[in-house]
Amino acid sequence: MVRLTADLIWKSPHFFNAIKERELDLRGDKIAVIENLGATEDQFDTIDLSDNEIVKLENMPHLNRLGTLIINNNRITRINPNIGEFLPKLHTLVLTNNRLVNLVEIDPLASLPKLQFLSLLDNNITKKPNYRLYVIHKLKSLQVLDFKKVKNKERMEAATLFASKEMEEEAKKESKNTVTPVEVPNVSDVAEEQQTPKVVAPTPEQIIAIKAAIVNSQTLEEVARLEKALKSGQLPADLKIPDYDSSSRDDEGKEEKMVPDNQKEAEAEPNNAETQKSDESAAMEQDLKSSLAFSLFFFLLLSIFLVVAVTDRRT
Image 1 (tube, rainbow, N blue to C red):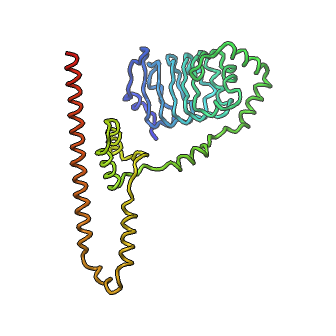
Image 2: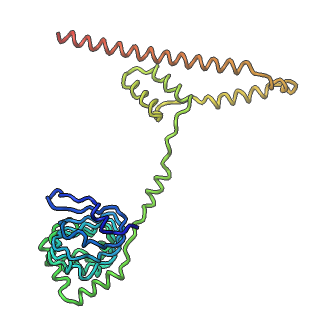
Image 3: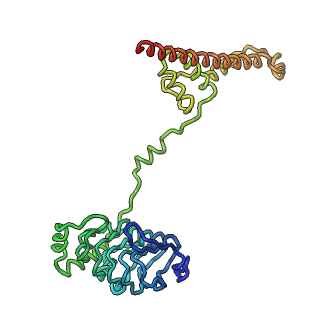
C-alpha cells in the first residue's frame, strides 16, 4: 500500500488532456485511502485515480474547480453522503469496475448538483432489478448513464415506478435481498475443449510419405497443399501412411517361429541384415529428396515457359 502524500501528488504527472483541461494523473500507485488532495490547491479540472486499491470515496477537500473524477478499477464499496458539499462542480464521475452492490449505495451521489455523466459498469449494482430506472430517478441532472444517453421515456418510467417513498424503499429492500447471479461455464463448451485433439508432430514415416506424394503429384495446387502440410505438421485427411511398424513386427514374429531353439543363442550377435535395411532406407530417403528437387525444378521450368509464351503472344 502507498500513502497519497503531498510529495506523491507534486511528483505525479500533470498535463493538459485532449479536451484542454488540466489533469492530474495518479493512476496505478496502489493508493488505498484518499487523503491530502488539498495539496493540489484546487488547480486541476480532472483527477485520475484509476487502477488503485481505494475502498471508500471520501476525505475529499473542497475542490471548487474539479469537474471530472476518474476512479475506475478500484475497490469502492462506500461513498461519502456529503460528497456534493466538497465537489460542487463535478459533472463527470467514472466508477467502472468497483464493488458497489446495492442501490442504496449510490444515494450519496444525489448530493452532486451538476452530475451529468456517470459510469457504474462492471459493478454488481448494475445487475439489480430496476437499476437504471432507480439511478435516473435519484440523479435528476443525469444526462448519460453507463455511456448511454438518458431518454425522456426512461425519466417518465422512473417517475412512475418510484412515485412514492414506499416504492423507493421497497426497491432498496429488494436490491439487498436479490442474489447477484454468477456466470457458470457451459458444460458442453468444457466438454468440447476436453475432447479437442491436440496437434501431434508427424513421424519420420509420415514425412517420407508426404515427400513421396509431392513427387507423384500432378498439379501445382496439389504440390502447394502438400508442402503446406509438411511445414505445418498437419497431415492431409486423404494421405495414406503405410504401417511399416506392424508389417515389420509380423515379419519378426514369423522369423522367430522359424528359428530353432539351438540357434537362439546366435541372436546376441550383430545382425548384418538390419544394418543393410537401415542403409537401404537411408538411400531410399535420399532418392526421394532428389526426386523432390527434380520435380520442383521441372515445375519451375514449366512456369517460366508459360510466362515466356504469354509474353510472346502479347508482343
